Image 1 (cartoon, rainbow, N blue to C red):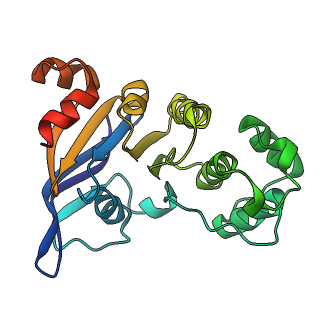
Image 2 (cartoon, rainbow, N blue to C red):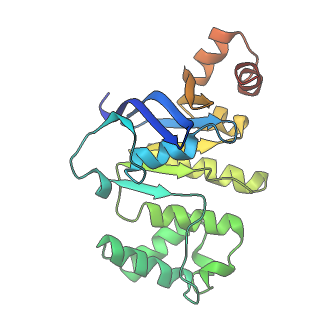
Length: 231
């Protein structure tokens, strides 16, 4: 399996506090990886370093291509849609930033695939949270990235909205896209992830498939495992 990212011994400190403590992170082609941990565990900082947004203090990150920033799609916890512009116009603007040509037919196809065609003329900032999350993923994938990184993509959504995001993540994998996502929802992780990276106090404390981790630690579910390892 081809490695898209191979990060070794990443470390990041802010003043005297070590936020990410010499961790190793691999992301392979065609897999869904969940990054989970308590608040303040270092998940967002880790994502920032993998994206090249936050410089690591030490450690190395190797990418599958020298032009990796053009091959990664990113959805952070909030996407700044352009105020006063419709859903359709927001897509056109983001496409222009990516250098992607979008025909009216292609826009409609993308919106229909994410159940947003009926709101394409509505101001993007007026959408419901679930609709905004789905639109953000469309924006994230406009340039057909090889890897998509999502920071808590279903946070704040009701169960139906969470399920919709989970189905979208699975569809991305089916289309050949690798996904790294952070989450606090262990049921979501169990439903979606091929592999789990569990962080606590800046360290990776578990790495493996949900089933293999539960078997190794002899727990009934991921939530029980999470509580056991982060006590």
